[in-house]
Every structure is written in C-alpha cells, then in structure tokens.
Length: 116
Image (cartoon, rainbow, N blue to C red; front, side, top):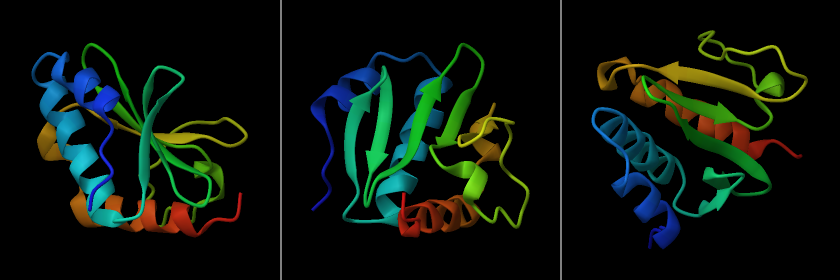
C-alpha cells in the first residue's frame, strides 16, 4: 500500500500547470521505485525517506527540481544530476517529456541503498 501523505496531496493540488503534472509524475515514479518509501513535507517540499533521506520534489515557476539529498555520492552513470554542493544534487525538469522514467527509478533505488 502506498504511503501517500495528505499534506503532499494538498501541496501538489495547489500547483499550476505544467508544474503540477511534472510533480505528479515524479511522485508516481518515486512510489514505483519503492513500495516502502515514506512521504512527507520537509523544508517546505515533498520529501521521501527510506533508510534515511532519499529525494525531494522542489517546485519553481518554470521547472521542478527532482533532488537527491546525498546525490553527490550517487554513481550517476547517465550524468543526469546537477549541482556543486557537498551532498545534494538535482535534476531540473522543465517539461514532462524530459522525465527519464527508468533512469530516475535507478537513481532512487541507488539512493535508498546508501547508508547515510
């Protein structure tokens, strides 16, 4: 059973198109990647936790950042992640067609396996 959070439901419901559709699709991919992942609002954005902090969805006016709390330690063999911080990395999604389903699933699963 998916562990969707009512606060995240409300957060996404209040977004405007096309950001709402991008965030909804990313959320679906996160739950597809792991049936055990937990969802909550942390630091003002949907965040996903399993064996520690995994990823987040951060919305802006013209894009969505699909971020990984410990993205700097991920292999990222497809070079999808952006950012220069010590830990966090993100993928900037401007249109829904930019979403790379299988590659995102692999990153989420790798992030879950990290021991943070």
